[in-house]
Image (cartoon, rainbow, N blue to C red):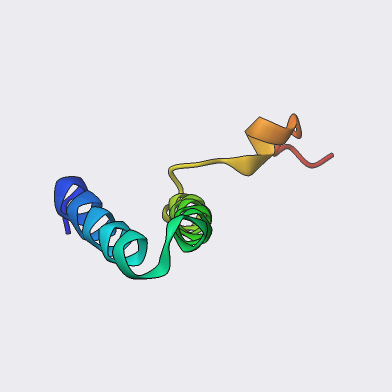
Length: 60
């Protein structure tokens, strides 16, 4: 799935939640979407948490 299609699906899901659930549910879904996106980046190897946290990958 391309990034634009993924963004389209997420946008549609957030629109449905906003329509039927209200603003509070929209925020909750958006937060979980961002967390899932971050986990996906880590699992794909596109985001290195060790470099972000200041830890090196070298073991002595």
